[in-house]
Image (tube, rainbow, N blue to C red):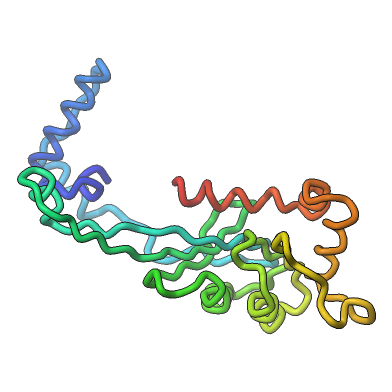
Length: 208
């Protein structure tokens, strides 16, 4: 994994491992680069996302990824203007297991809400609870969830300026209930009652 992370040849990977062991003052044998190369041929890596067997809770979020080219190191050493390019990674995580259930990589021009449908399409089982932050607040996200999982509870904090819909009096939506509960009991009480705190676990997935 060190070789993949740092993009080094096997001989340099061996030297890196020896340096780490020496710095940590450990007495551990380090395989030579030939042994590392032979063992890597038998190394099995996960090639697919985990598929849930039953109903799941889903937390969705996105994060920007900076693309670093081969010339970045030379520019930092010799000077020059760095042209940074970005991509956006959207993931759906099961907060109970920490497994990433779905992922989409887009440009920064694609909005977060537009990827809710593609992410949910990758999850074969039923979704019972859908959580996301306020950036996903809006009818398109609620519709995307309802079209695929009509019985799912959608937990998204409404914006501070949000108002109930036109049918709130006769047929209130989930969003209308959230707005009403926040107005009556406050946002913190709403978070505790709905379990919105689990949304933070998607940040742990990005940190990993």
